[in-house]
Length: 127
Image 1 (tube, rainbow, N blue to C red):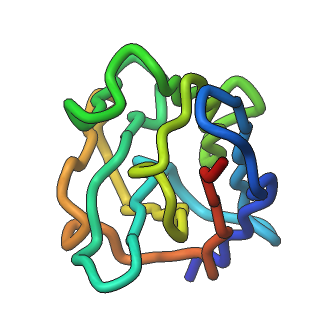
Image 2 (spheres, rainbow, N blue to C red):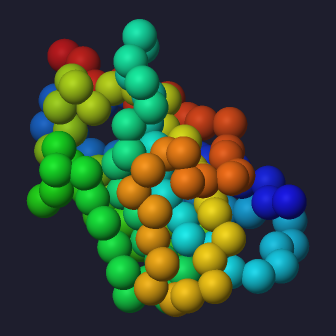
């Protein structure tokens, strides 16, 4: 069992920046591939970014490439998401997610692949 907690959401104007952070609330056993998934009102969950537990493998949705950066600089089983050049279509609830991974290069780019989820943090981009 992994309990994840996100922080850092908020409201910004278009073109602004936000940083989201995610970490387990307690001790974890094993290594997990981490990801960020978002859901806009009335829409399906959407993959945003993923990182392997080694940090060596990273993936982004096409819609955020060049604007968002995922990292686990704070340690294995953490995931920070730096978002720049925010657009109104980036609005939604952002969830941190984790899936057990043996390989250090393993990442998952589908929301369905993740077993553990945080409660989510709201990001609103509006003028």
